[in-house]
Image (cartoon, rainbow, N blue to C red; front, side):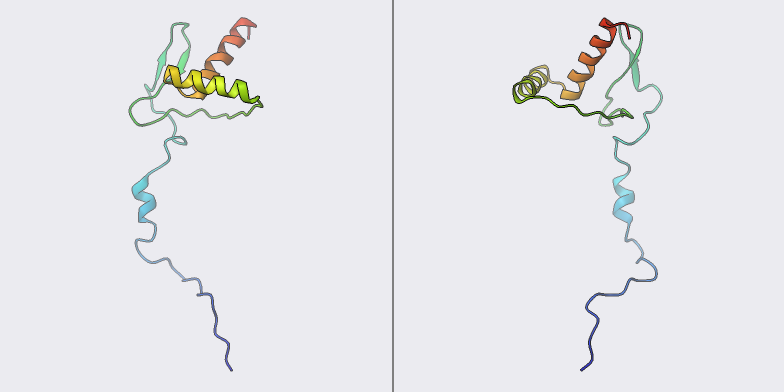
Length: 103
C-alpha cells in the first residue's frame, strides 16, 4: 500500500493575481504617515492632529492604563455625549494635566 501525501506541496511561484486584493485595499490609514497640512494649530499655538475626510491621523505611541468599571463607564459616556472618541477625551485630559503641572 502506497501512502499518499495529504498536504499539497508549496508551489514554486505564487499564481498570478494571488495578492491583487492586498494592492486594491491599500495601506491601513492608522499606519500611514500623515500628509502635509493635516494638522491644524490650536488656540494654544501647538500642533494638534485632526481628522480629514476618511483618513485618520496616526499617533506613533500607544499606552494602556488600568481603570475601574465606574471610571471606564464615565469615560465612555462622556465620549458618546461629546461625539468624540475615548482616546480624544483621554488625550485632552492628559494635555490639561501636563500643562497644570508645567510639563
